[in-house]
Picture 1 (cartoon, chains in turn brown, red):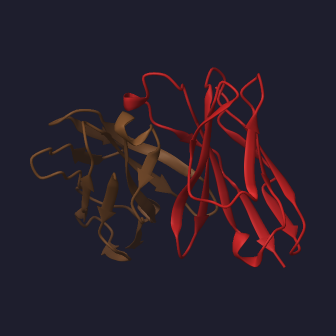
Picture 2: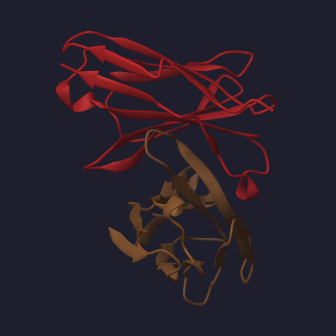
Picture 3: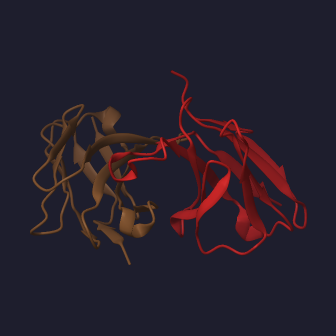
Length: 113
Length: 115
């Protein structure tokens, strides 16, 4: 079945550091890929998406590129801020998976001032 | 445009009771999905409704059920509550068609605590 694997956290960075959160997936067909962010006490917010190979999703300084050859969708940001502290979820959605969204386990990010 | 609204935000129940959670999707969205989020198991898919019909179901016992109304609002019911049902229950909505490209939009969840 479809699955998503992302790096375990927590990840602790200093402000203005470079961020990478790794995400790889297993899926039949051509899934759409997403990154969601969850702030304390809130639900998940869509951060960015990519719907086909080589697409780059971007939002609020975050970027991720859909790499079909490596089945990866790594999240990157050039300079993190304290306000980026949250839990980040990689996810996929595919008609072969019955349109269920499959989530990774989540990666908690702490950014220190 | 109003987002996904879940009520109530917090709920405390005791073992053996039942509970009903409510979700109002974004206007125009016809698909509503429910997830259970716990520290140990992460996000687990419960079920999805589209046009008042259950379209997908996760691996949860029959104590967990749901329904969707003609206005796309959805309710989730859990009967005979157990301590392990303590979790954040998240509702997500999407258009329901052209699903490969459509992200789900989440509410802030209902935090259910079982005493």
